[in-house]
Image (cartoon, rainbow, N blue to C red; front, side):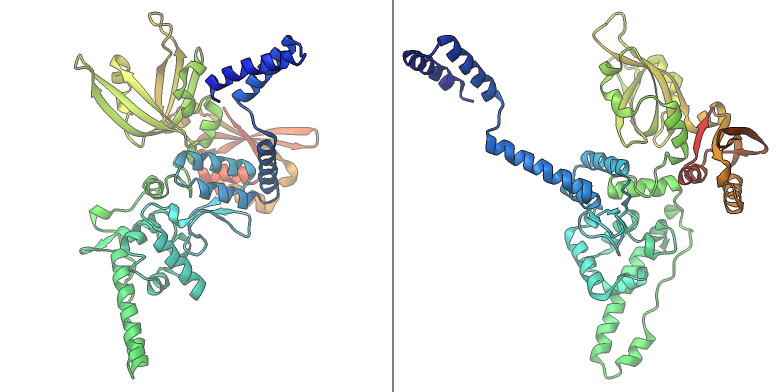
Length: 455
């Protein structure tokens, strides 16, 4: 790597080899090969180590896929982009990545007995290592937590304080031990939220228990107990009921990504069938030069700015179904044309063309032709859902389940079936049933491995 020294040594090598009877042309060839090799090369021991590690990791991924992916995620859990990449790899491999859970999770990502990867509680923002250690230690000491009251009665609330409980709730870590929605933790009665009431109850319960152990009449005192706070009703306008999007937004704030669902799930069929581009590709427009593009996503931020001429323009960020994002800009007439679609948390479908303007052929730009709400795309552009269905699948139970899902997904889209048995097929169109592309309907089709198309 030391070029000056290398050049000096070349002279010594050529002269020394020539004096000893070697062909100067061969010596030049040998030295040239050495120079090329030295520009980037491994010695044999180094290359062997790399090959051995590559074999080990390949073996682990093949035979212990969940443990391997859990280790990768744990090693990179502070790097959201890398975590997203590995989450996509888990999905490709058929590994479920489960959300954080106070009865299942540890500090980092782990693999469970079912072959799932479980999110680590320390990956939730605002939940530190000390709080996780306390939760895991109490779980191992006293068994699984049965409900939220059992949780606050047992854990050390100095380590697992109200802020930690709020973060765990937003991240979904209590979902399996509560029978009420996450937003109830934040509903207030008077000046106290439900999570604050739980912490107060847990501390009083601990004091009561410690006092009873020191009292001759401890059994009588403990039987009186401390009244558990009831789950509050909605009422305070400052803590109104969360909708599905709010719940997922809070989950993403806590965990850094959507886990339990994705806000765009209801539009997955449209996105998968009508988009030819994902937002990340728009960060490198030269690769798309000359192409018509269509893409969709959630608007996550909008900035209205002014240029030197005091004219407004807009910069907005779009996050796609695959978790990738891009930043787009609109000027002049385009901004005015689409202004009513540019709001945070709008689900939009965008079409346009990537090209270089005549006056500046070296500058590739995206010219947006149309911005629509995704719900409008479904309503105006999707007329028919065709499901390919083998006759042998149709029995009483399947028909009942299909009917239930279809009835729960009423809409305007014509439902068609391509029935087939062997080489014989028959097309059927429902005269009475119209559907929407709901999450429940699409999940039903996917779970039964049924092929479907929209048109």
